[in-house]
Amino acid sequence: QVQLVESGGGLVQPGGSLRLSCAASGSIFSINVMGWYRQAPGKQRELVAVIGRGGSTNYADSVKGRFTISRDNAKNAVYLQMNSLKPEDTAVYYCNGAINSGGYYSDYWGQGTQVTVSS
Image 1: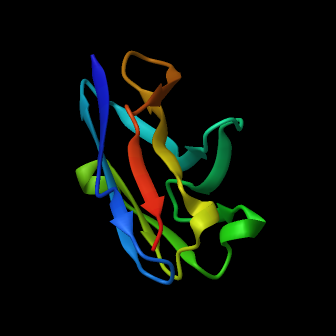
Image 2 (image 1 turned 30 degrees about the vertical axis):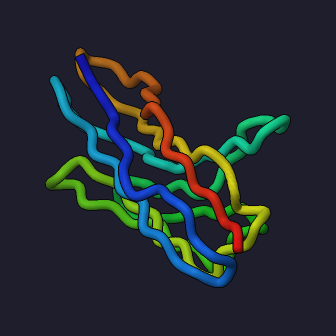
């Protein structure tokens, strides 16, 4: 059984910063791409940022220059540093990973962590 557990969400004022963390646990052979997605009320889930095992990254245009994704392969963890937060960044943030736990890769999701940007 593989689990992804996020932490680090909360309430922050516009212009503030938050750091999200996500750790994968369980029977894990290897992890390929890891990423962060978000879903705001009444909207579809959207990609925020992804990172390959070698460190290559891709960001949504709306967060470029403000958010930074990183990972620690030894800890099976991925992080999202969010700076200059805006009210429109308010959403539930989900961690995602392409994880090999039994000979093939499957998509796994965390339970989500709420980020609220408000004064």
